[in-house]
Amino acid sequence: MFHHLSHNSNWQREVRVTWTEHGPKSEFARYRNFSSMGLSFPQFSFRPLFELIEPRQVIQLVTHLLLEHKVLLVRSKYQDNAILIESLLQLLAPLYPQIPAHKACSQWTFVNISYITRSMSEYVDMPMPYVMGVPRMIYDQICKERGELHLSDDTVLFDVDKKELRFTGDTYDLPTSLTYSVFEALTNARMPPGDKTNPVFSPEEHWLEGALKVRLALFEMYLSLLDNFAPFLATHAEEPLTAGNVFQMDKYLACFQDERAPFMMQFARTQNFSSFLEHAYRSRTETNEITYFMEGAKVFHTLGHIGLAMHSKKTLVQMQRIYRNVTSDFILSP
Image (cartoon, rainbow, N blue to C red; front, side, top):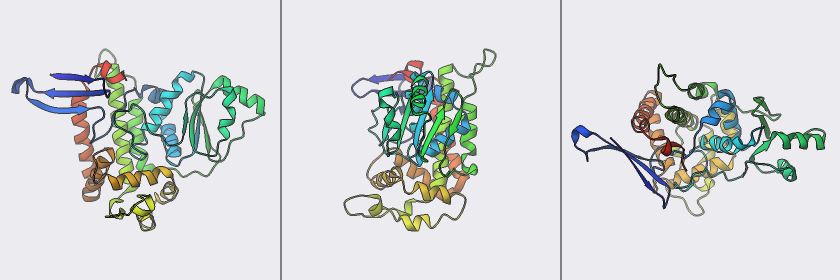
């Protein structure tokens, strides 16, 4: 039996699972969509992302966002841009600054504009990182006025309709060995729900299941990418708690002698990574998604990929048991 409780004061959504054979009050598990310990669950559907963007391009966009490149999304149906942007930013967790758990959106510390008007065309030339959505009509007007849209080397132009990604700067791709499981999860997630002869899930549950598996695949990838970073965190740091004070960056980067090195040398320079390290240091006295990530890092360092797979599978199975019977109202409503 599943119970769905709602508290409008802070948008709390809670699901409790009970075994009826053990009595009506015998609780088996409980999940909140802003659980303080575990993977957070955003209050919107990832379906547009899975349907509109190819798995390989999702990974490319995530890579560019991690490196704090500027990203422009061009689409005719510009109404999708907001949820596409938010879905991409959610895939960076926990490697981006945390936000209070009751909020429905991510905390992107740079510019985030889902709709660029013609009068805002100069925004594409901003020097700081951004992610912005541009309606096709506005994009065509800007190109017509300028003759050609000349973008800086750190700007990504992704045409959602044509599925074309343009980037002229130096590329620092994530190693294929790390992204394989993410690619597989994204590929499976974009498959349509089972037909009537094989109704595995309802459509809402199908997209939710895919989003969960993609999040877990990225969680494992980030753990493999950062490897054993915890020992390089300071035991006691003096104020201000900046990345330079709480983390031995040079010693940490010296450990990378494999295919991860080129990417990590660039990622280590980003503001997002500095913020992550500051939150990781504070996580020793807090309970949040980064705390869960730190626990996963311990499992990975101790037991390797097999232990990490077991850790993730246990998390997935527990969440699947709960999610499969959650109503569409819980899945889609804010």
